[in-house]
Length: 161
Image (cartoon, rainbow, N blue to C red; front, top):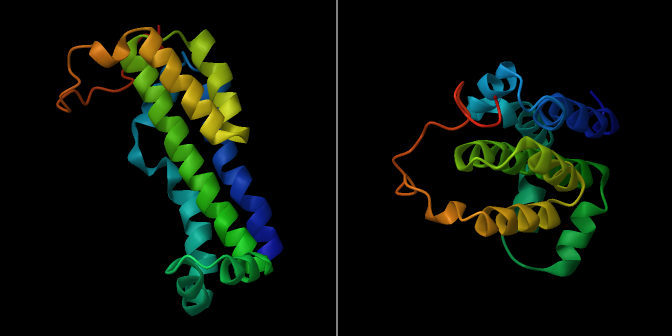
């Protein structure tokens, strides 16, 4: 598959997961799907398909902070497509966390869905807004913040109701 095709397919591999979190947050299937830590695997597979053939160049570009080296790498089709795949995968990981954290904290899906939509396009803004909402609702003080609460968005979660 060409680099251009891999670039294009990366978004479409993540889009169904975003769609269910944003458009069908209360569907029980969404909670089951997003409970899996493997939802980011497909964009990561694209990342690996692009990274392996260019491993030396990729390592040179990311192993030391040099703007000119990174600019040169990102100026190549495979460099830009590889970083795009990384961003898509990381943003999906972040969206999955936000979806599950909102369910755990009882944040209504009507509030979470727009924040997820913002996160798809501007992940730092979406994450910041989500953290502000979570803090404003006092979710940081909920029981179970010790790390032992692994229930996530299960059948009894507020997003599924």
